[in-house]
Image (cartoon, rainbow, N blue to C red):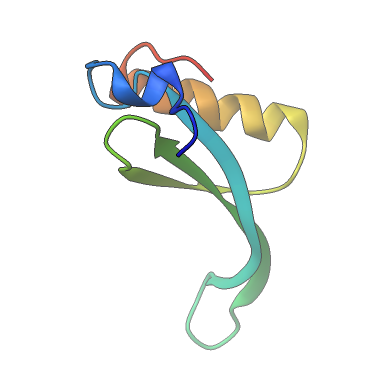
Length: 83
């Protein structure tokens, strides 16, 4: 059996070490019931390395600004983490 990564086996708070990935695109309806606008969005998946928990965030596009906004909003919810 191979060596396990040190980040995954040492005790630490949840979401102190995370992996980030994107899923999508997904389409969702925005607006009124009769004439909704279909908008393409993506899901940012934050996975905790220690306890294998997942946190999902909706991201509007694949730009750097949208990604950084998503990461910083997640920092406000979770606290300090390493990627």
